[in-house]
Length: 571
Picture (tube, rainbow, N blue to C red):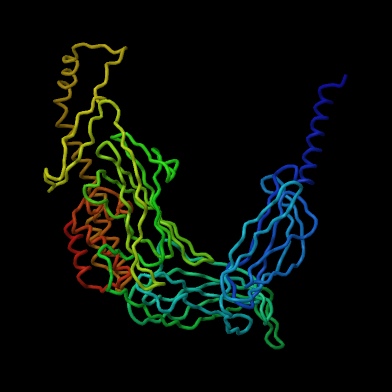
């Protein structure tokens, strides 16, 4: 019989053998998968970038086929393999490399790629690649830069893309890019600049290409000029005739792009809807009803049921290629039979091969006011479509709901009146709820507690003046030490920057801070609805005018600035 030590040693040896097998054959440790990676999603006609098909956690003989659109050409370059170890887990990766060349303008698909592995089919989804017109970049000393706008005649409020490209064949040690002052344009706030690095091949050889894309919003009507952008690069020093540079010495290379002319066109006044709120671009608007709790969407074919006294969640999604800063849902029609409460929208935006894309998600709580069938009215938004040059109306579908009786004692849903509402508006008395009256706990005692309540009060009364004096002293110290936010706002108004866009941003920030002070809420969480309901119509109108000024131009010292100053001074 073997000893316990010998059995333990054999167990350790078996584990070591198993780990070795898993390291050599990673297919036993994880499910295999296939990936498709393209170095750049935007190239020019005649340029070549690299594309890889990656097989992970298994092995395969022979190269897969890489289908591409007719505006691209794919050439097989070869195969390589490696073992990658991450967090003590190894994966075997097989790379099939392809050269991808742009042949014609347009947006083309690369892939999908399918590979038969035993009884299963591995698949890598397709990737979209945009081929732009061939651009001749001036190259001086092994490097060159250029800049362009996706549209040099945009409409007011339209999103355009500024592209800056740096092409070089040297080893770059450091880069410093200074963007230009975008005259007549402002940077889109919800999406930051996008940067891509790739290797391209053209008639002049193989180059490293760096591209920076900045989303902008046309903000001021008229002719403007975007000045040159400047790039400073540190590269290893070159031989100068017979002189050789010192080891490790560098030289600075400064390059600048050409200026770009842009003509921002005004939006037409004919056909402009009264509810138009600055939405410019091509958009889609959808609404989905979600179950109570907001977890699962209710299918269109079903009629949702909700007890009276509870709420439904309607998720409204706005997608498109325009900026959504300041967008808000309109209120429901009067006498709709329900009330709504909107959360602040979640806005996500990005810059990719398909240009600028943004998504705004609104969650609206709907509270029915009576039992029976209920139709949630469509949500309508007005937008200007630059492609057709006209205003359009976006509309969701109506949603049918059945309001069932609530739990016993809930009564009817009360309608709360705001100041100025009349009884004729349909207001009802607030019903007492039966469930507010709870039974006495079985383990509780009922007795006369009047004496026990009076004794602490009698002891505390003589001490109240002393506590009051101490509290006043502490409050005075706190007030002397804490900065006065109102004084800070006045100081900021007295030191506004002279540049129009920076001045507008400072005014908007001061207005929001003043609203937060009046409402007792943090300024970043405020939206137009909260400001209007809490501070009145004039404050809501000022909120909207500041939002519109971002895209409709701003004149320092004008009426808008005077209104903001008066609002802040009155805070």
